[in-house]
Length: 241
Ligand code: SAM
Image 1 (cartoon, rainbow, N blue to C red):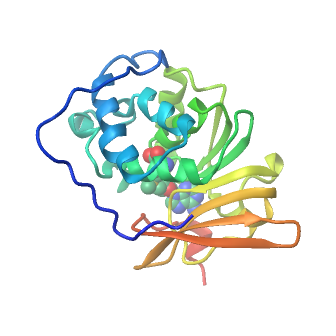
Image 2 (cartoon, rainbow, N blue to C red):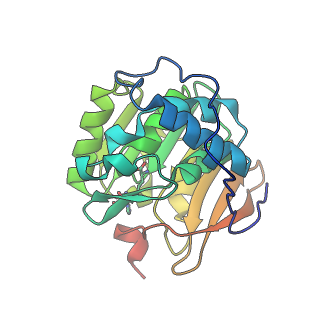
């Protein structure tokens, strides 16, 4: 599952009619639904994401609700945006790609390291999985938890404040682990907390990072490099020599 580096999106001509509609979803999901349909079509499907559950979730979750008010008008732009505390919400395409690479089924159990705004966790919850999400910056963890509860995702997402380097051993093993901050190398506990057949999707590296998918097999681990990426660094234990 290897994609070309630096995937470019070519949007030609005037805005065309958008077909289909977003599903019912959480309170307020009808707001800006047309912008989400456009985002999915032009930024996500156009770059090759095909998983219907991912596409449906990206059409449904109100991304703007996870952002500070000052950023909301840009919520459906094709780029990461600041969420405060020096952190960012990832570009929509990257959220969709990571969700697709995790290869999820409803009922799966997923660990997310780097809750940030809570948006990626909401997309996963909308796909029908149970999410355990860890955030190292306490004010972000608190704010994400509040928004997730407000939007009705509280039962499907548990947020914990802490260093995600060590994973969430009490809830392991996981069907998938998604990491949204880049360590210089893969934290061993995250690999060990995968189910056999489980997938770890993680950006790795300092200046030059690669998005990797590591699958646990019965004999070990299989690693695939997907695309070059640029994530904020994983802080905490990952920074120790
Ligand atoms: N998934 C997020 C979203 O949907 O908004 C994007 C998160 S942002 C790109 C990365 C997040 O990882 C930041 O909020 C950062 O504080 C957090 N982070 C960095 N190192 C961490 C660690 N060791 N444990 C948990 N969270 C960490």
